[in-house]
Every structure is written in C-alpha cells, then in structure tokens.
View 1 (cartoon, rainbow over the protein chains, first blue to last red):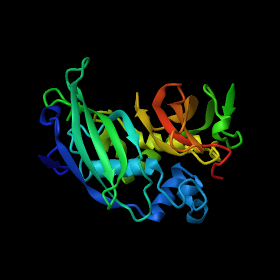
View 2: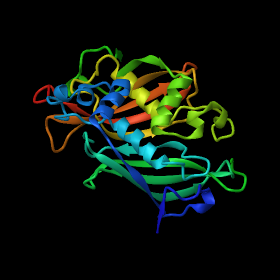
View 3: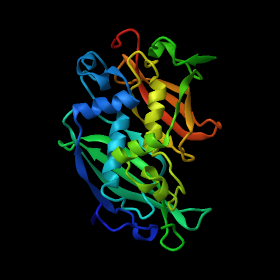
View 4: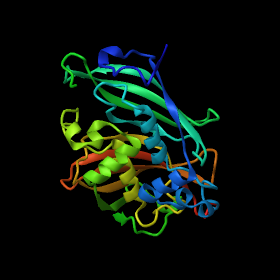
Length: 157
Length: 157
C-alpha cells in the first residue's frame, strides 16, 4: 500500500510498518548548487564549474547537505504528513553518488520501525527510511531518520 | 594535541587517531533560521515565531539540516583542512536539543578511525566525530562522518 505525502496529517496510531510515502520532485540547477555551497559548503567542487574539473568530483556536484536539505523539502511538501511535523531526533545518511546540475530528485520513504517512548507515553520514535533518487532512478542519498511522532490522544496539536 | 582548521591541507598520511580540529563560530539569527526553513524545511516551528509557540518546539528553532549545513560551513572554514576537500560518504547525525535564535555555534572534531580503502590504494576512509555546541557549551548536534581522504602519493591535487 502506498500513501502519498498529501495524506491527512498522521499521528503515531496512524503509522504502520511498511507504510510508504512518495514525494514530488525537484530539479537541482547549477545555480542552486553554487548558491547553497557559497553559503554552507564553499569548496571548489560545489562552487565553480571550472575549478571543479580537477577535483575529487571531476565536475560540479551538489553538497551532500544540499541534497539532504532538498530531501527535507520534498518530505515536507505542501504540509508535513506527520501531525506534529517532521521532527527528526537524528539518523544515518549516505550519499552513494554525486548529484549533478540538472538532476531531478524525488524521495520514497518507508516506515521501518515504530517504538513507543519508554519515558513519555504521549509519543513514539518512528524510523523512516528515505531514498532520494535522481531522474535515472539512481540513489543519490539514503537517510534513515528517527522521527518523534505524537500520539493522537495526549499529543500536541 | 590540538590542530586548528587553519592547518595546511592534510593528506591521509597526516591524520592520526585523536587528532582534534576546532572551528570558528557562527551566530544563528532568527532571520537566517526562517530563510533556510522557507527554502528547505517550511514547517511552522522553523518559519514563524508566533506559529512556533504552539508546536513541538514551543518557539522558533532552527531546522536540523540548517544546523548540519552551518556545521559544514564551520568545518570548511576559510579553506578545507583536507587536501582533496571535505568529502563525506555519509555518517550518523543527531540533534540532542534545538538551536534557537541568537545561539552561537562552533564545532570540535576528532579523528576516531582511519581505514585504508580495500579496493582503492590511493585513499582511505576517515571517521570524524564533530560536536556542534552552542555558546553555553551544550551539544546541538553530533555528526560522525565518514570522509574520503586521499593519500599524498597518488592522490588528486
């Protein structure tokens, strides 16, 4: 079964193992890559096409943190699908390949674990595995995040 | 022994277990929190002081990805301390507490593992544990990243 990010905001009780969420898509332009990098990751392979040629990436590539930020944008969409918002306590992230100018990213997410909080009965920790793929279906990023999700009863609005 | 981010660019041969790097600092303004969030994480607790009051965060808080991006900016500094650049293959990230408007972040990093690549003799994978702290010394983020670091001999420029 596949839910979409347009589903009504969900509480802990609404989530189940294997639940899927699919995002919209977002093109990554050279301009966006350079703008993000100048602000947050000013290394030649992220900021300048010519300088990027003789680097590890052999050409302009998006900062991994730019890909992570775009993944978050796609996950949130028009409105977060979790009622209390998409609140990450942390997670694991990897970038199997560079994201290049012109790549179009989209995110597929799956609920892989649901754990009630031991100390706080009004919430749980949900593990969401999110694969960010480009227009060729290649995986640009894998993020396994631990989300704080409130219960409907006793949860925040 | 404490190295600083102003050290000469380093190759794999120059790194050792326990090596430390300390960054400069960066204030996180409310304006910067909202600007980042509108672009990448448009949820009320990141975009609007008033709307943030009745949310999980009970007040404006920076997106975790904003904290991650600022951590990268602080790690890179004026020039990356790794000769081939700070190139992350992935890692683990956690945000033990929110980052608030006016917080001043800085990063302390330590080399915790050095592993030669099995398949590619010109490089290794270095694990760098980076703690991002605010002006009260509280940990805002812990990032354990796997960096690709080239050897001096046979490495890229």
